[in-house]
Length: 327
Ligand SMILES: Cc1cc2nc3c(=O)[nH]c(=O)nc-3n(C[C@H](O)[C@H](O)[C@H](O)COP(=O)(O)OP(=O)(O)OC[C@H]3O[C@@H](n4cnc5c(N)ncnc54)[C@H](O)[C@@H]3O)c2cc1C
Ligand code: SF4
Image 1 (tube, rainbow, N blue to C red):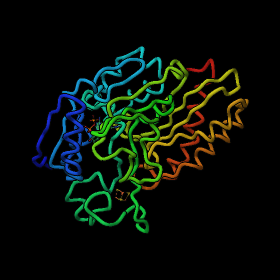
Image 2: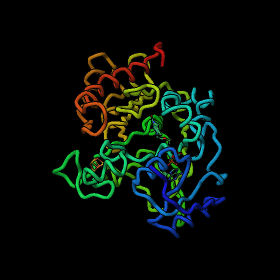
Image 3: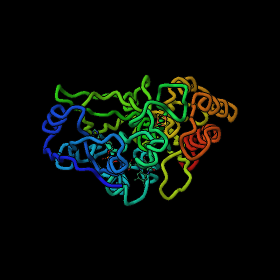
């Protein structure tokens, strides 16, 4: 594997970065920590001739209890006790991402926008060529669901479900202006493993807004993976909320690592508000989330097992919101 040549641009402001992205539209990628993008480039996966490095853009750095800059390193978050105590699912998730070395370079923005994964995609060029490529890079068919013209690559970032559970929003900048939206709306519900985001071409993620309303709320993130030392999630379940005794005051549950995008199950959790969360009610809720989650066979563990683990992990995560448990 080798890295093909590319032209590196080093803007020093958001305006300069988005102008470059407009100039090189369709021929460039933003480069944050490079821990996802550059290994993909080495495997010749969707190469672009221009890379726009974000490390010299001051507006993308800095963190507080209100906001995380897109270029904040995961390792820096890991050491920020007040932040992680304020948003427990974030603390659980960040500690479980990859390895300390990857977290030293990997960033918040890069993790939220990490490329979807599939064992027919994350392979060397030689390997993929021998199989005839696939829709996501260089080919015209899917090896996972061959009868469909759609990609089922899995969203495998850990931060997204954790931040969705605490109602985080993302800030976006484009050469035409700026906007912000709920984090969940960043992921395209009508898309697939290729068209996975609602961002416009050249749009830059500048930061994450953390709402005061969910600050200090109990919460957790539980991750299923093969090797706890560094593997991507085969399933990630985030829960955050408030229980008054047994009664549900507020609840959010988000699932990652299972489908093409992270999904928050608001219709199911809203139906629990005001109700007593008995063991039977919790079991029925967890099974409903499982019913709504449909992994395919494109990661290491079998989809049936990953699916059955959804209800187990949802139950465990929500149990931790009960007062008196280790949340
Ligand atoms: C061995 C290994 C294990 C891993 N395990 C895990 C894991 O367990 N969990 C997990 O979540 N991830 C894992 N990863 C994936 C990845 O390294 C991390 O998710 C990391 O956070 C990516 O951040 P980055 O800054 O390096 O992103 P980059 O690689 O620089 O970028 C990733 C993508 O986001 C785009 N991008 C980055 N920043 C912006 C921005 N501000 N605006 C617009 N676009 C942007 C880039 O163009 C690129 O498409 C692993 C990676 C490796 C190598
Ligand atoms: S799900 Fe299909 S199209 Fe998508 S990366 Fe895998 S094999 Fe390729």
